[in-house]
Image 1: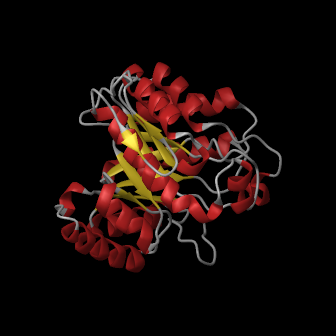
Image 2 (image 1 turned 135 degrees about the vertical axis):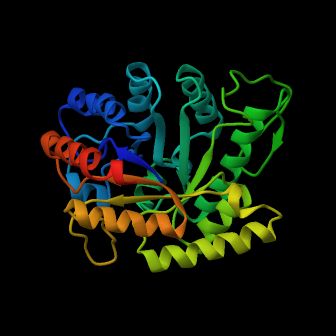
Amino acid sequence: MEIGFSLANNQGIEDIQALLQMAVRAEELGFESVWASDHVFNAGHVFERIGDKPYYEPLTVLSYVAATTKKVLLGTSVLVLPYHNPINLAKTAATLDVMSGGRLVLGVGVGAVENEMEAMGSPFAERGAITDESIAIMKELWTQQDPSFQGRFHSFSGMKFSPKPTQKPHIPLIIGGSSRVAIRRAARAGNGWHPTALPPEELSEGIRYLARQAEAAGRDPSEIPVSVSAPLGAGRAGRYSLGTEPGEILEKARTYQELGVGRLVVSTPNTRSVEETAHAMEMLAREVLPQL
């Protein structure tokens, strides 16, 4: 199982340079990937966590990281597709993939903060349909020499689109979310399923459902790997956590591994301390990575 590390762009850390340097250190320590999250406004659960402190834009963060690292994968966990024009996003993502030598992984989801989504001009009730169309548009633009699309929200034809991503056939799109709808979207259109903080028993059930849905869609379930994002810390009601001590973290990671999880993306507990985040990363590299 590969281990990724969240860069905590969503934790209200004031020292952006220290946060960016953590990506360089993560690569030195042997992490497979580094990840950034996506919100525009500090609203809902984001405001509850960080108030008016900084929440940095993920693709900007990863573009900087691409220039300061050489091999670590660059992931989003996850981009809220209804916040983004899919044509502009396809352009930005393809550019970053080319610049980084084919290291981008786009985790994408539908979002959950209604007032934020409405402020972005996306009807909350349409978020699923917007997400499905955005995925189809990006694939079309990335893979076709003469892209054409006629949809509910966007239509285009007769124009070239470049650059194409370095990765073929396109940048991996892993589908975030733990609902049955998200799993079906992963089975139908994703290059992976990426739930957050699911307990092993729920994850196991989800993986079985994913396999059934993949087969129903005519796909081999092995084409849809599972990655999980989970935080360190003591956990709370309705939110699974990896724990705080190396032994507990390793045990829970191995449980995920036995269920078939191919990548675990670890985030730090709610903290605005660069030192605490860096300490957690060093501990994982010392105590957990060598065992997995």
